[in-house]
Amino acid sequence: MWKRDEQDSQLTQMIEGKLSRRRFLTGTAAAGAGAFLAVNPVAKAVAATPTSSLLNFEAVPASTADTVTVPKGYKATPLMSWGDPIFTGAPEFEQHGKQDSKAQERQFGDNTDGMSFFPISEDRGVLAINNEYTNYEYLFDHQGEKMTADDVRKAQAAVGITIVEVVRKNGQWAIDRSGQRNRRITANTPMMLTGPAAGHDLMKTKADPAGIKPLGTFNNCANGQTPWGTYLTCEENFDDFFGSNQKGDVTADQARYGISASPSDYKWHQHDDRFDVVKNPNEANRFGWIVEIDPHDPSSTPMKRTALGRFKHENAALTLNGDGHAVVYLGDDERGEHLYKFVSKHRYEKGNDASNRKLLEEGTLYVAKFDMTGDLKGRGQWLELTFGKNGLTPDNGFNDQAEVVTFARRAATQVGATTMDRPEWVAVHPDNKHVFCTLTNNKNRGKEGQPVGGPNPRQKNHYGQILRWMPLNGDHTSTSFVWDLYLVAGNPTVHQGDLYAGSDNINAQNMFNSPDGIGFDTAGRLWIQTDGNYSNQGDFAGQGNNQMLCGDPMTGEIRRFLTGPVACEITGLAFSPDHKTMFVGVQHPGEEGAPSHFPYGGTTKPRSTIMMITREDGGVIGA
Figure 1 (cartoon, rainbow, N blue to C red):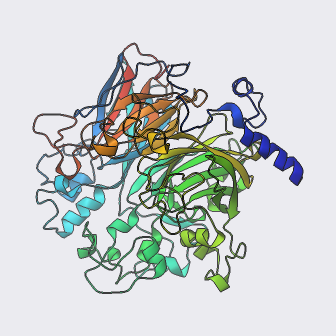
Figure 2 (cartoon, rainbow, N blue to C red):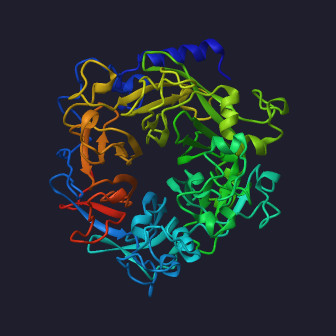
Figure 3 (cartoon, rainbow, N blue to C red):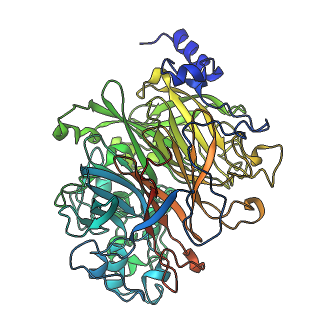
């Protein structure tokens, strides 16, 4: 164990950046904190002159066009769009919203989000893809105004997860509708609860008095992938699907998660009592979890891992610590919520996947607390969320670990965690020493309980930032870390001389707002996807449609790589094993009736789509 003065010395060195970028690049840095760009929001832009050896493509300009734009020498091709059949004999997409639930159950779901690629052979693999929610204005011919029981079933089939085999022929990947692994997982798929909340009274319902067999998953935002070959899907804004036409009270815990006894826009409760919070108040407790899925076995039961806590999960960034413990970083995507970490009780055993698949059943959950300085860097702690510790006791309303994980938000407040600007995707650098998290925006920053400072340095933050931290001595199980901001998004053409202009590495050619999706390729390129304001006016003038950028964590340089169509979000990122194909999701083009006909043009409906990005010369993406 480290002595306190030794620990303080290393932390101080990391914060002050005494370790050079040169030492980090050569792999000799013990902690590596000074290896990256130091953020100074009012200094001259350090990235004005291209210096990166990683970013070998010509940046694209901002765009408001209804298409996907990629750099010169690249092309973007649709792989699969909402409603495409994924089974042999399944019906083709129908433009007018008249197909029934049986058709949607055999088609690609709506609003693609996080995804992972699982290789089978050199030219065959499996894509596991989240389908977050659905747009009733396009799903139904009546736009959701006259919902029937089958309409609800259809909407429930449009969400969840799509698992499909893909095959490469002549250098191009395509869906194999006859793939043995093809599967739809929806709001009605049988699942299993594991961990401390399984079988607890909070999980028991009329349909499942044992409290261990929930039905379905939905509002699946982003994802994770394990070394033992499973897919992690993350339940985010599950509250949107619950409601009631009856008057009734909800608890403070239910309200903290957005549950109310009022009509839901999705109207599932009108025809499915599971989603009526007055009739079934515990049903919502069975959502908001990380779900682990075997993408290779379509008969397997998805497992809801309650040890990782219940909140509005964005993604699950899993890394193996040097000692074999599995560590999962988790963001709770809501204004003023928190950043979490899970450490498995047991250790990874190479080649023993039967044992490894139990690693997420037991472990310790933590929540982050940051220094609230004004320096855009500092120290932080992981606070343990274990029953009986840090005030998580019956005196404070916690009676067991099941209550701690089920009401993780309240537990985080109890221990004094830092409220954050919507922590979304987390990504671990390939060096396994640095972790990045997008903080998308927060119009409430500066209000009561959400003070300005630390990693959330701007009042009414509408641009977002990317947080970076380094665990003590590269040990992800450590409860100490140092942090800084890799970038602060902004608009230097509208704001000058303050943080709203952005950090040094943001300029008029690469500016954007609301970083959301984030991920690394094996070379260490940082891919950044946005889900923000695409009005192209006012504070957002010149930023155009949502987009994807690429960053070099060593030099701090950022270049725009891709722009999306009208009113979309760019989300979801996966690579073929040779990194010659990038799979990118385009979600909700044409949302709220915006004038989009992506991706097929003409008078077609806009459709959420997985795009394949390739180089015309067949090379590695970005290289």
